Length: 140
Image (cartoon, rainbow, N blue to C red; front, side, top):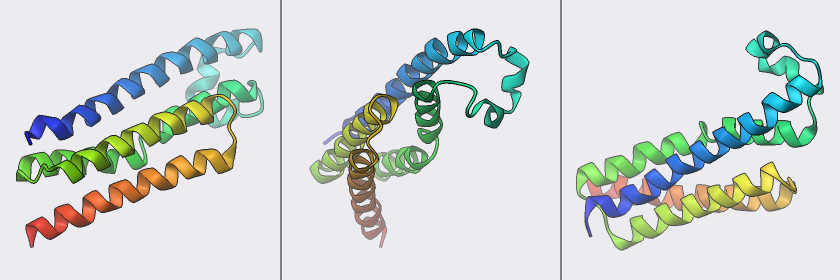
């Protein structure tokens, strides 16, 4: 396997960030205008809670979540590539992580059924944990 094989899911996550950013802008800006909220009021986004429709907040919350757990994924996947430890198990786990995060985003931004969302979150964490343990053992 090539290092690029594990980097493809990293770039797919990047595309997910772009999609969620555009979705957030496309929903938040019109909702703020409709609610008569001045753009400067968004300097502290916590003040927007309850002032915007839940569907708008769900998209923004998901966008923020993409800068939590996935940041560890990026570091681990890139480290695996740099270490030359790319194998089919790491690549499979990387794609499972990415697929689960895409599904997590879709669920959170639309129906927001917590048990479904948490299932994707937990599977993503499990796949990431496998990557971490395997990569760490490759160093030892």
